[in-house]
Length: 430
Image (tube, rainbow, N blue to C red; front, side, top):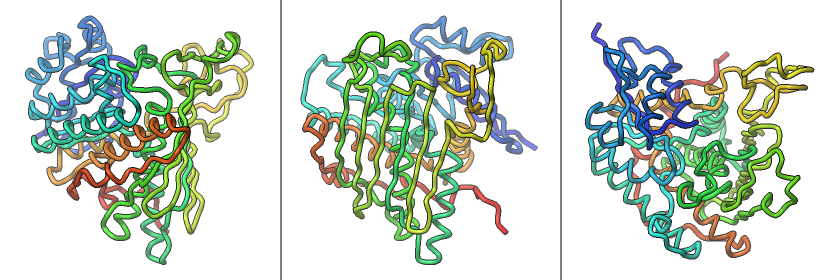
């Protein structure tokens, strides 16, 4: 049997790049397919070289496949998949560069673009930032479309097993005349980002609303898209947004910040209310004030069931430790400050968080020319529209901001929609 090699490159050497490299080794076996980590690049070549050694990204002679810049890596490695997992301000230019270099599948981490005015040292109100950011994203999506590439907008929450299960359940419920998603709630929170650049708006694009609330917003948008596609062939999209973005910890006594990374320049709390075209509602919260580690969850009320996705923490595993020292350097769950006391460990946390499903989707999109990502250009567009409208709403004391202009300004082809029929079964059948 001939072996098909899928070549993968990684941009960045931080937290996101680390789990990306690990995930490709966790993808379920596929007959006749080999996945090769073919290159890594970083702003500092020494970081790329160390990352390559750690993750065995080396050639036949054992030399690290570390590159001084993105363009050099693309030219040398000619990857099938390019993972853009570096600082947010590089996402848009690297995505365009990858598309123009002929990369087939571009895995673009959140957010897909940030306000271009930061790079120009400009100031502007939130309405201007919204329109200019969406215009920048349009340039990215145009470049991907013109190159015939596939964009996977890397929102791992979309790829939770629980979300896949709910899609399957929606399709089943529609056979009996049900299957309406009525109200959704989602949360993503922890004590502060891993990324050194997070508290610098020109590098991160924003704070908790932009970089945390985006996560549960992904499956919330996805489920309404899928509901519309299953029922009538067209996604149900967000119509208007009300939001609050605030700096909480910066204004508290110094003693209050002991267990947190206190943000000085970006919001550490974000709340978004989304009203959809069909007048259903969702609420999303992101914040940097979770003292007990990361919190990822989604609750969905439909016309036939209430469905909760308790990703982290959940009580599938429970541990009591009177002394943290016994755990050594083991991390029981992301951002958990100590294993001492009662905790809920999450073994194979990377898989639970959807990353394996996400990268398997990227690989499958390489192997099947007719397949496109579940989370693609439409997801990137609607997410960005909601988040940027959220900052505008916050600037206007949580007044609703209409999204009709953004929805009408870009037409998406069917292959840029999610395809629930392409999802593997999540449940067994009796």
